[in-house]
Image (cartoon, rainbow, N blue to C red):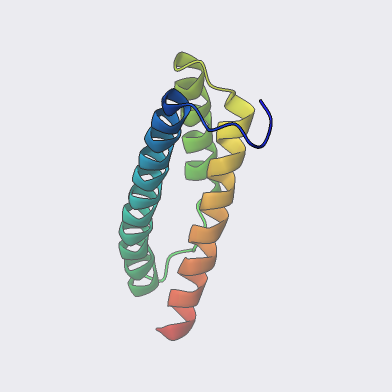
Length: 99
């Protein structure tokens, strides 16, 4: 197709579905960070470490297996969640310094 051709309605519909899914992912990520904020407050109150390496490894292993069962690339899923967990730990550190 050239740049002058219109975008097929079917493609627009599929892209709209993708946009809706992306919005849902962002909303779930927001919810996840709200919950992990609660964890950070509890850890700060109890003077616990911001990072639980054992829990993270268990979680990444489980997410890798779950991704395989959904025919997703486990390495990609683990890397995405590893990045999310790094941000959570940074957030927990910020909470500790404010306490």
